[in-house]
Structures are given as structure tokens and as C-alpha cells.
Length: 447
Image 1 (cartoon, one colour):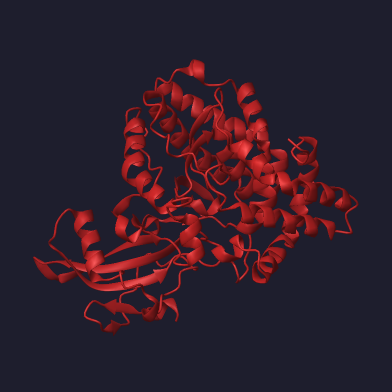
Image 2 (tube, helix red, strand yellow; image 1 turned 90 degrees about the vertical axis):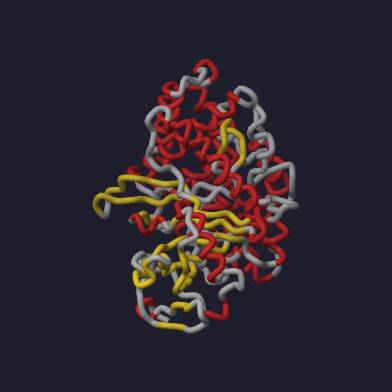
């Protein structure tokens, strides 16, 4: 069904074809078939959301318009709906108004519920805590120095029993995602790093006041707490090694394929070592999954972003700031920038954090010099390798088989999916340039 004929669900059970949602500027959104709308997504829920949002019970829902939010390859660890809610106040029932929000919950498959659920990464409960408890603390810290700009989306409601978070729809305020397939230019990168610096600085200040504030949040992608994602990383590297071996037009293919195969047994432990929190490093609360699709931008002109907001806090953890930097810079920037601008981007981030911490009266004796921080970045460089060689190709895939099960399994469907992902010609060009750099840094050797 086209957007122009989008189906609206009347709360009485009827359907109408009118009232087009004003924020329908995301081409990846698809109208949800009425038979696929979850039972919990109904009038009662949205009225409760509006009661919480407006702080009044004088609101009634007239129609709902339910759309998918994001396409294949956009979201692996969540299911999101964009819901346009047509409502009225009981005092003026003839005046129908519209509000749009994003509903975020877990994929309802056995594998996703297992690996992402409370026994492993516990992503939904963590994100609820982040929105309800941590963001208000960060915003209060930043507000004291006049940093009132928006860094995170607003939360409208949280439902623990449904593992559901209801967020403001940033599209309404003209925030949009950049193109994940092309990567971010320097203007987009610097705006993203400014947001990240605010988050990191606020968390460092909060941690300085209470050393135990983040003690329960030490589970990043590589972790000693669960093996839930081991299959993804190991099977991914195995497929990468085979793919590199097939590049017979590259003189170095056999050399690097051999090194990559030898690395597979040590991959998880090397990743864990990178994620180990070490005294003396600049440690802070990492966003944990910062890539192109987890930042939204507002623009003055089509090519001139003016504001950025960070999204998605399912995988946040306390650890070295270098880990967020490696993941973001090695998955999300223009390919040439990894080769030409890496030190520049790290330096930009460093000075942003340093300036914020100084204004926040942080004990700057505990903050590293730029030279020492660059050493910390290099020390965690194995995660740059992992992010670039295993995760980055997933982020630029357009495969119709892209889903959580394809990432986390080793069956024929999953291996076929990964083989297609790592056969991407763009990844080949990136890998041929980056593998010699990773090798020269020693990350392909036994650590």
C-alpha cells in the first residue's frame, strides 16, 4: 500500500483512508497490515501514553496510524513502530489533533528474546533505565554549564511489563538519519562527536561523585558476562577470512587470509581484553552501539547539518571512551576518512571532552593529555579491527535476509547471508587498505 493510501485504524474497529501523517518523510516506513499489529498496540495503550505525556486524562484517541520504522538492515536488536495518534480533548471533541511517537520493543523470536533478554544482554531493561534515570542526571549536569541543547530523544512513557519504550518522533522536528550506505562526512562526524563528548563528560562527572553509579553496566558487545554474541563475531570472522582468501586479484590475499584464520580462536578473548576496564584510562559511560543509524541530524540546508541527537542505548556500558570512538569511526565515516583523518577526529573529540570537563569542574589531573589519550586509543585498537572487519559490512548491507537470526546463527541461511554481506565490493576496497594498517599495529598477531 502506498503512503498516500495509508490505512488508519479506528479505535471502534473500523478503517478509514484519510489524514496523512505529517512526518511521513521516511521512505523506509511501511504501513503495518492490520492483522500484524500487536494486540498490545491499541487505544488503551496510546491513551495512557498521552495521559502521561500531557499530564492530564482529558485526552481520548480517535484513530491510530501504525507504520514500521526502518527497513531491512536498519534495526537488528529491536522492533520499532511509528504511530500517528489522532486524539481530542473531551472539552473540545470536534478538534482532532495529531501526535506522532516511536514505539520500541524487542523482536519476538526465541533467539532474540534469549540473547537480548534478561539472562544475557538485558537490552530493553537497560535502555529503560537509561531513559528514566540516567538521561535526567546527565541533562541536569550539563544544564549547570549552559549546555541546554538536545543530546537525546525525549521519552514519553516506559512499560516494563511490555518491554516497551515510547519515544518522541524526532522526524516531527525535522531530524532525519544520514545515509548509512555512504558514510558520514566531517561535518556530520563532528556534530556526532560533540554529542558523544557531552554524554561521556556528564558520565565522568557523575562517576566521580559516585564510583558505584555504573557498577551494574559492564556488558558491552565483547564481555565476560555472556557468550550470547560469540557466534556472531566468530562466524563473521571465519566468513571474512574465506572471502579475503578468494581475492585472487590481490597479491596479499593469502597472507591476510592465513592471519585471519589463525585469529579466530583468539578473537573473543582479544575482544574481552579490549573491553576490560583499566584504571588510568579515561573511562566513561559508552553509548555502545554508535553508528550512522543511531544519530539523527537537523539541517539548515540539505548538506549542512546544524544539530545532532544520539539514539539507542540498549548496549551502553562503562569502559574506555576509546571503544565508542573506534566503533563509530570505523563503521560510520566516509571510507577515505579512516585513512586520512583518524587522528584529527580523535583530537577533535578529545578537545570537546576536555573543554566540557573543565567547565564542569572535573579534576583535570585525572584526565589524560592528548598524547596519553592517543596511547589509550591505540591500546584498544583491536576493537577498531573488529568494528571495521566484522561489523561495518553488516551496517552497509541491503540484503533481504538481514535479521537477528541471520546474524546470530551458523545454519546455511545465516552463512549464505554473511557470505553475501562480506562479498560487498565496497568492503573489499576498505579491507585491502585497512588490513595492512591493522597488521602493522599488531592486532592480527596473538595479543
